[in-house]
Image (cartoon, rainbow, N blue to C red; front, side, top):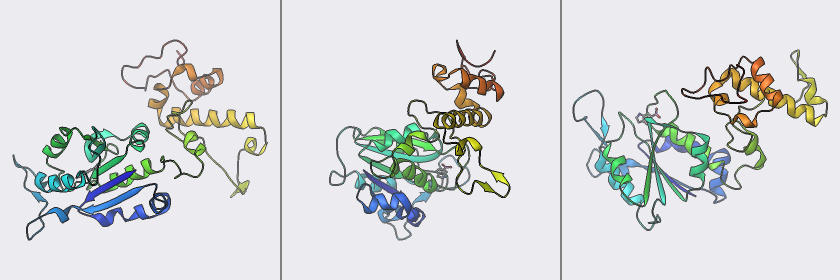
Length: 278
Ligand code: JB8
């Protein structure tokens, strides 16, 4: 997979040389290139921003500079011209929150370009223009309901979330199936708590069942813990579960955790037959 990141602070992306992502790059699984947006400016001051039409605080990134940069990266020499071959990702607090499902979809793409804005963001015509190009799919995304100073941290998050799903990046692919937010069957819950040696640390003992060697009991305990945590911390995820995947023991744990059949769940959700407690 090829990923280009464009930013006025390319050094902000330096951590992408480290850890699993850095290893994927060195191994050639990931061709990741970081570019300085100012390389595509033409004026003496290397200007990338200007005042907002209509007034208001702050500065807006100019569409002409972004257009030159993105056209260069989309040139046939560096890109396929096949319809939708490239996904242009634009971090913005007004985008849709990035999900594990998004990361899985993006990991299956050939080419990503991440356009990191600063100031009050990028002139809206940039997203509009590239969405009209048949070879490009545009996705504006956010990390959640809080505001950063620019798109660079969101780019780091996106690259890490996607790169670890590429074949050969994570040593044991089974660890991708078991983790929180896994979209694999039986997923959709937060992870159970994990423990290692020493068996007792500062007076705190690891749960006996985990040292029992009884695989069935361990599996049930872990599922109970995952359900309990999810009901307490993320009731929206319980409300979104396929109720048919819950067995009798699951429903008992949810009732015990005070989950009341989706009353704190998503608006418009109904619990239906076999849902939560009445
Ligand atoms: C200027 O919070 B964010 C975010 C904030 C930003 C820009 C991009 C993303 C650009 N401020 O995800």
